Image (cartoon, rainbow, N blue to C red; front, side):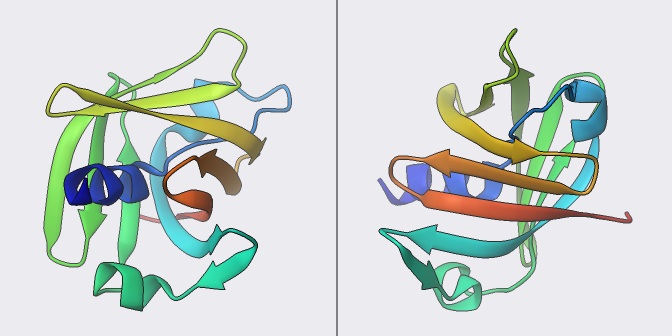
Length: 122
């Protein structure tokens, strides 16, 4: 269960599409806000680091980074751009895209809550 939460939070890499495509998803994203059950959670307390990133590559490869640790996997965006699926260790985690543009992503996952990311330079 902890691995799923860790994976999902890192992967949190979801996006809410409004005429956006996977092209806008490519790059490095930092988790800036985590909300569960209507309450904002402390990222550093949850992950033991405030350095929580997701990196999406053009070839469908994904890297989740929490502090000094990283995990690799694959990502896929649904045809209707509503769901982002991140697979690590053969475990797919689906994120519902609430909002997505070239600089901001907001995704929701049942166990994790709502995650907000901002795009950052590598």
